[in-house]
Image 1 (tube, rainbow, N blue to C red):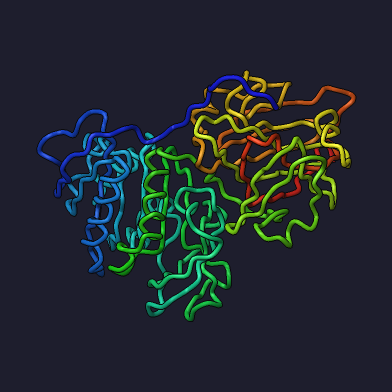
Image 2 (tube, rainbow, N blue to C red):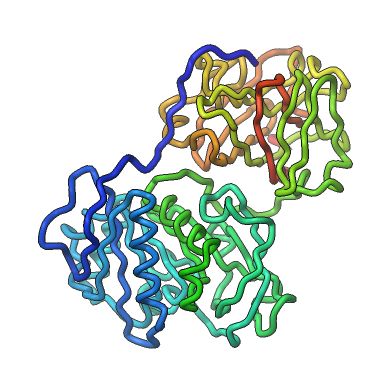
Length: 450
């Protein structure tokens, strides 16, 4: 709907001072107080990858570009409570075997539980098999691997900063790990391997290769890629690694809760739009990257194939305007109609517009209830970056999660409206409002009281 003045804020990597990168367990002099720091740890007690120096150099270069400082060490004595407190994230870069003693493990557990972050790269999954905390943090342990070869990576989450720059598939050459367990039930899978695209996969067709999770108070990102030296010169892999680090240190937000059981309503293809109808003025354009972008209006693209009662609706969205003044929304609980105002008058809109009064700004149930603005602001990525909504409807209750953070909990008491059965849709608001959507999916939930 309408907008007035700029309000949005988002957690981002602050403007940081760049300093020299220090090798060893700890620098002789402290970094500037306002600089985020990342520790790259590459100790090996088993197989040693010859790509480790390339990986360290790549993380250093990424830090110089993105504004975080990097220390690199193979000395486990760096794992003390006082020293780890200095780091926004610790990158386990192709570590192997038992690399930390009991006291060092305890210090690292405390670091994670007090909000620290872990980034695991490739053989980080081949590390600390007798330390259950680490196994849960990494998400899965290494089992075996076939020869280095090309394979197709299926990108499952295109909103997370580690994968937002990729297409729906990613063809590349690496050493592709098989894992002892599937992390999908515990972690949020970002990408998986198409086992038909190479030989030697042993995970029965469900083969996660990159994932993220919130873990015991901290954040954890893992990618199975990165065996070869060439990986660290590959632009797409470097962006993948940078996105994982940025999320880990809080420079970008994403929904890293486990996700299973969703059915796509729009998967980025023209064929998946067959169940949708455009109501009234304006339209959406389908871009080559599988993104729907609003144009003109005020209209509504709604899923006409069926209505829903109790469900979780997830979708990714981003605003184009640098000022956050683009306007759109996600509508739920409305009857079928070719009049977009029917959705306005009979359903509810979860707003996308960061420049309005609280009950009409991003995350609000438009005109009825503001989001928790403090939580919203911490969870919100700025214009130009992807965000993920989960809109959960059960009975007359409507809850909203933004990038995995619950920001609204609303109950309908209007007898003229009902959330118990209705359609879902996305709004195109006006000629100057450009909001993009992709990966719209839904999971039906139990009906309360049944």
